[in-house]
Length: 290
Image (tube, rainbow, N blue to C red):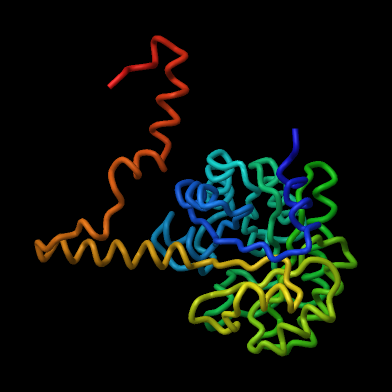
């Protein structure tokens, strides 16, 4: 049986850009898989909004985050990259975090160098820890996967306060320490994105936040620059919130809402009712026709 880390390694070995819509729960992950995408990422921003109705400012606990990851992994067969934030403490906490995401079924886990409580990479107030602590987090992550196979996505937010050169230096050391995927958050221009990819080895991830600081380039351009993954952390959450807001207003105004709604038969099919009934037909005590 091919493991989720092995599936992700096979994707990264391909010379192409992997477009990665980000999920925030099991249903959004299922829709991503049904749409034909080969991998997904559990967006901390979107998951915090969905699970606790609060901003991504370090308010969710480790147990809440890994529980969300487990639910997503149970719902899909494509690899999930889990958001491990800062690792929830010192190097030993980081190891527990990495093992927890591995045992939840993730193909990779992201560990970053922000100070706790972390913040969304495209919002004000974020700071990074010193180099020694940042490097210890990645070293601990790599050491932890000796027990449970999982890829390490190493993220730096150093560009914000310390400049692009510092961010690239940190990411280069993350690679030397054994990180599998590098993520320099929030480069501000196409030229900075090119420099990140030119100066750093191995697979790189771009984070495309609509309205954020990083240029929203086309897929062909991102591939030509040198990215292996393009993450879209808020596309589904933003679209869902817009649709719900419009529909709620239509209900309040008593105006037609059918154009905004998915056909009921299609909705049932995408959630999995048809699949459930087909499987349950093998068991007389479970199956009910009609």
